[in-house]
Amino acid sequence: MLTALGLDSVTETVYRAMLRDPAAGVASLADAVGLSGEAVRDALDTLSELALVRPAAGDASRLRAVSPDIGMEILMGRQQAQLAAHQQRLEASRAAAAQLISEYAELRPATSHPGVEQLVGLDQIRDRLAVLTREVREEFLTFAPGGPQTAENMAASRPLNQDLLGRGVRMRTIYLDSVRSSRPTVEHATWLARLGGRIRTIPSLPTRMILMDRRTAMISVSSDDTAAGAVLLTGQGTLTALFETTWEAARPLGEVVPTDPNGLTGQQATALRLLAEGHTDEAIAKRLGVSHRTARRIASELMDRLGARSRFEAGARAVQQGWLPARS
View 1: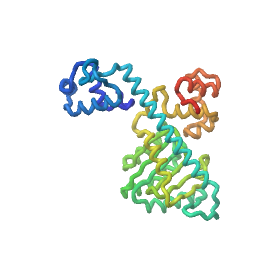
View 2: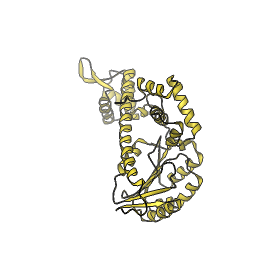
View 3: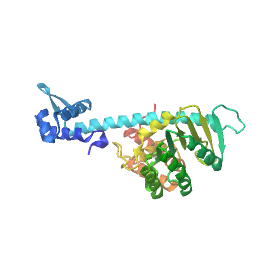
View 4: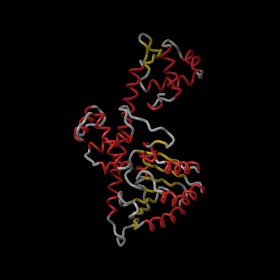
C-alpha cells in the first residue's frame, strides 16, 4: 500500500509488525512476518534511513517504530522533495534541449555545418529514418509528444519497429500521459511492448526526438508541425542525458499514474505550473497532448480546487498551499 510513497512491501510489512508489537526484537519480527532475520535487519536499516524507526527511550540498542501519522508525513515530505528534484533536473534538461534545438532550427539546406543535416518535409524525414534504422545496432530511443498518435504515423512506423526489435535492438519510447485515454495508441504501444519494446509516459515532452545508438539524434524543428522538418545531429550524444532524466521521471504504461502529496496527477501538476506561468489553454493543450476543450476543463478544475477566480490568483494560491514552489 505504501509503495507509492517509496516503501517496498517487505519494509512496509516489518514496519507494520513493529507498530503492532513495539517490544518485538529481530527474531520475534522474523517469526511474525515469516521472513529471515537477515531480511528483517535489512528492512530495519531501510526504516532507519527513512527515519521511520528510532532508538527506544532508555534502551538505545532497541528500535521502535515512529507513529503512523509522523511516519506518513516523513514519507510524503521525502517524496515531495524527490518530485521537486526530478522536476528541476527535467526543466534544466529541457532548457538545454531547447537551446540546442534553437541553434539548429533556423539552418538552411545550403548551410555547411559539420555533423548537421536538415531534412525538409515528412517524406524526406521518413526516407532518411528508414536508412538510419538499418544502421542501428544497439539502442533506439524516442520522445513521442503530441498526445494520441495518428493511425498513419503508427502504421508507417510498424515495419521499422519490427525490424529493429527483430534484430535485438533495445527500444524505449516515452509518450505523453494523455495517450492512456487513446485506445488505438495504447494498442500500438502494447504491440511494441509484446515485441520487446519498453514504454513509459510523462505529462509533457520538450519536442519529438529520436536517438540512435547514442550517436545520432533526429529532432523536429517545429513543435507545432513535426512533419515540417527535422535536423539530424551526428557525432555527439549531448541529448542522451535529457532522455535518461525524462525516462527516470516517466511511468510504465501498465502502471496507474500516481498522485503527488497534494492529490495531483503529473498531468494536473504540469497544467497548474503552465497555468501559473500565464500560458493559454491552447498552449497547455499542445504541451499535454490533449484537446483545447480538455485543457480548459483541467484548468477550470484546478482553479475550482484552489478557490481561485483568475489564473494569477490560482498561481498565488498554489504557491501559498505548497502546490508550486515559490519563485526566486
